[in-house]
Length: 198
Image 1 (cartoon, helix red, strand yellow):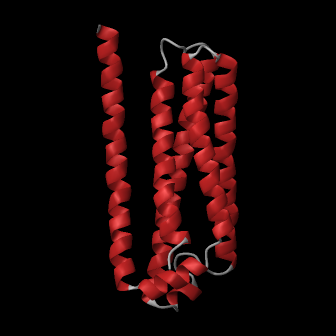
Image 2 (cartoon, rainbow, N blue to C red; image 1 turned 90 degrees about the vertical axis):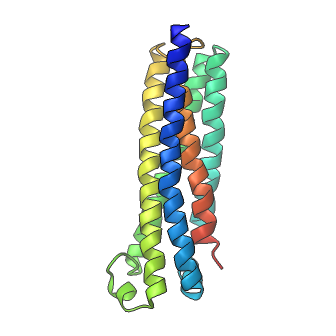
């Protein structure tokens, strides 16, 4: 009974934490909406500077990783440790792929003089400058969350390998999965706001 209460408490704590993350990104999305309303043409021009192929690839990578993380939880519940380990390793590789794509994407933007306080942005219309300010803030913060999610998945992987996570005790893996799903969900909003803006 006591263990059940502890498990419930951990899960509730995780949901409260995730709610605070939703509030954080929700506030940034509201800020985006307000500026988009004020500068729709500048935001559309900013969106054209972004690479939709990179954005689409990263979306697919995160969606696939979300599935494999969920599948790893099912695998551990079914006592299929080897499969769970394989799925977690694949999920981590997806996260790494996302970050590498983002590195090259940001590098291309810096090469084209599109970074905070660059001459091109300072000399452009205010809305264009604000668009990229929000782009770097939101995608940078999201990238940080991807890294945190990968750390949690890596810890879970080590615990699965060491039999600390099992069919009877998998709260850590489940909570890590919840966090990873949140990271993916946030990107589902980020992608159309920046890459598909018209």
